Image 1 (tube, one colour):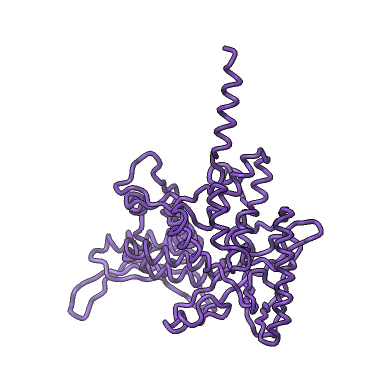
Image 2: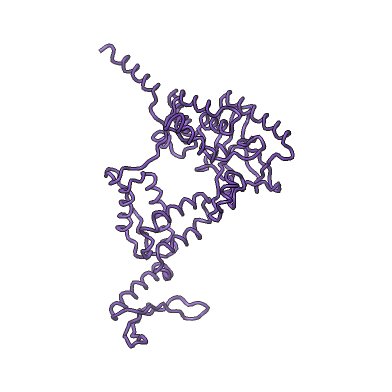
Length: 435
């Protein structure tokens, strides 16, 4: 049986302190001990030593970083754990949450000093600041994941993040801030297409978003090999994302913004959100529009050659709409000419990539000239609501949008349209006309 020994120690100034000491597993046949000094009384040293011994016997190792600050631990967690399994965009979002919310309020705590009460009070404070429910869920998720890692790797004996609650019935002190997505009426959509007609860089992305309900990254990640003109379907095989590099200079941002090679950052392909590989049907009209666009790009390539910009990736892409066994998390897009060629749909006459950032300009113009109720993601909500409006099965809508849960489709992306209200009113008149 291992015993905790307590003995006196003397500082250089003659002050008496107490130290605990007990034997731990030997290494290379050499005896090893865990010790800690600085206690004012023998009782304090024995109590602390007994707790350290209990943790050692239960966990199999001593927690040697029990004094690390929560801020330092978060940096370590991002570098060691997140970097191995998460996409750069996810890590970047985690880092924003950490720098904006966790470090300012919780970073100065020692990791071992965090309690459920401290964390719950922090969640309520964020709620009272008026952040949306989804934002608070994201913050809570980062806390839970990092502290689960701390428990798994024996930084702490147990996680204090268990059973944290987000207020649901309580009203925040500051009204909730949110950016709602809207249902865009057909007459408004017509004005938007007139503002961005065919042959403008934004027309094809807007058409695909409106008629297919794709996410922004999925639209701009489409290649011509993803389009099956014979069967009139599109395979959703990937999305495009931007890897931010904080070392970019102001000159880089101004001179190269929006290009595939933008400063020290770059665009890359990765699996679609939730790995939602899927095949979706397209209308005859959209198929014709894409066919004409492909022919136009072919003519432009002949005209600009050899000044036509062509892109390639580090690893070959899949084009069948079926999730690969080992999907490539990051597949960098470049103009090196040394990788596998890709033929992007969203390109200009000279072949340069039309990046998702062009939609920021579109949104600004639409809000200024047509309607305030617009953003690109509203096209996705509008598409789902239009399908629901004509009675399309909700499971089909869920699959088409690539949602992991049908509740997301029903509760977030579908809304009651004017046509649905008219049909409902007519049904009520029929039901109760004889009574």
